Structure formats: C-alpha cells, structure tokens
Image (tube, rainbow, N blue to C red; front, side, top):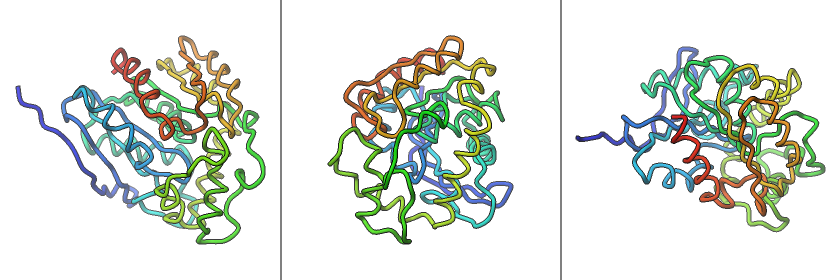
Length: 274
C-alpha cells in the first residue's frame, strides 16, 4: 500500500479574507494531530517536536500560525477574539481535508484549542494542553516578563526579558527564532492577541468549559513553570477522566526545553484517541 506524505507549508485565504500560514508533515491518510502555538510565537515553536511525532509514520501533523502571528495576516481592528481564532483553525482543517484531530495547544494555544472544541466539537477527538493555565488566578509572572515591550520594534534584550519566564530557569538562552517571531508581529497584533486570551479566560475558567464537552483530556505541565502556578494543573481534574502529568525540572515551554518528554505521553495518549 502506498501512502502520500504531506510535507511543507502553504498560505490559505479563508472565507473572511484572512490568509493563514499552515504547515503539514506526515502521511496524509494518518490520523491528524493539530498543534496550536502560544502567544507571540508561531508554528515554528513545534519544530523540534514534529520529527518525534511523525517518525513512526502514524500521524499527520498540522500546524497553523494563528492570525497575528508568524506568516499569517496581522490586520488592525478587532479580529483576534479567541472564538474567531478557533473558527479559522477549524476552517483550515476543513480546507485541507484533515477530518477529526487530536488538538494540542501550548500555553495560550490551549485556550484556542478549548474554544475549537466548544465551537466545532465534531472536529476534535481529544485535547492535549501543555502548560495552559486553568484560569487567570493561576498567573504568577510579574515585572518585565509579564508586560509587553515598551518600544516597537523591541530590542533583543527587551524580548529576552519578556520571554525569560517562559523557561524553567533564569539565564536560559532564549532561542533566536523566538526573537524573530516577536519582531514579526505588529504592536497591535501583539497587544490584541494577549487581550483576547485574557478576555476569554475571564469569562469562564478552562476546566469549567472542558468539563461539559466530554472530550478526552491530557494536561502536561512543566513543574517549574514561572508564568503559571504548576499546582493549578490539578484544577483540570474537574474534567471527567482527565489525565494530568507534571514534568519535573521543566518550565513553561517543555516543547522547547525537552521535546522527547512531551512527545512520549502525547503519542501514547493520541494512539488511544486518534
């Protein structure tokens, strides 16, 4: 039997006129894994994880740059609400014929993943949230790591300060690619996307939203997260059947700090739920 591999990136113009950058890897016929990045990032944040998820040839990995990020459009105006981001992601899945997917979100990407399950439950077979705070009360970052740049474009040092709490230890070398992702944004898209995430979480906590959806849930949380209180991961146990795994020695970005430790439980979970 011959399978077709889908490798590469493309730009899709959606019904609302927005153009979204999409990356695909792995066999087209395989069950889909949809990876959604966090704030001020892009599909590139998953680069080190993708080979681990596609190596067995059992998954089709789809990544998107959310509106305002990476290679996607960065319009002005009120275009960045989380349900709208989720709707665009759902339309991407339709356009590429991916069908149902196990949806994986890192940080605020988990917020969009939750909204996708709410807005289009038929497209989501299961959810994986990686260091996604359950509610705004769990946020612990303060100072320069909690606010946006004071100038635009921001300097390398400003971005490194902003990103510092995204990793498990002070002095961690922030990848140069992350600096590029922040600079690629506009001041409006940077601010508006952050505000949209806060607004969605302020309406209702994520465990409360997820508890009524009936979707299998895996929560992975770096125990040394310096942005979100790691003990708050236990709040997701309010979701029936949820599996919550703390990752000792890792911080807010385990997908960058130690990709294999994320890939192993993710693949195990997806094999049962895809």
